[in-house]
Image (cartoon, rainbow, N blue to C red; front, side, top):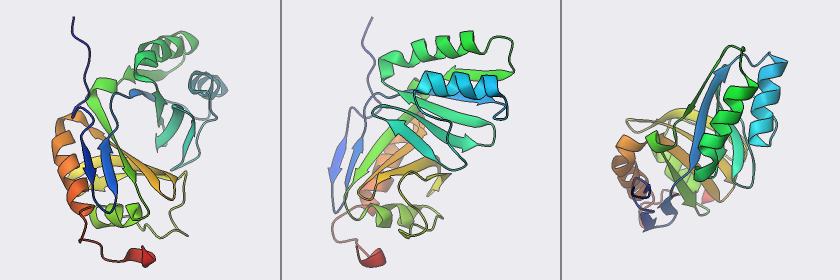
Length: 190
């Protein structure tokens, strides 16, 4: 049996922002009742972080939870641990209304690094990227150009983007074009 490979084999582009396909990433999509203590306890325990508030991303190292909608979160973990996280959730939530799926092979994650990352995202998404409006730890589920995506800031110089694996080459091209040296527009003094 062959080893799994990421969508773009860690493709990298160096512009005024560095764009890199992040490699294999464990992702478990979870839907359920956020008002249920059983649900929130099981999800938080599996992720190792608290349940995120609306439009929030919480993480500790490579583990984390992303708020995706009023009844959906995405659990992030190292790729080899996704099946184990799913099994734990399935066991802990037995008898509780929920849906949990390992979507690691259906999604791709990109990392943006550099002081101009807000400008790259602002070129592609209908989101106010001003530092006083969109702060580290905040998440948006939106579109980047014509592609459904979610993104969040880990810091003022690092962002993560998730999209469907099937559009990974297009997303890499979008992000790289927006990050091309010479295409800076000077958003907020970047």
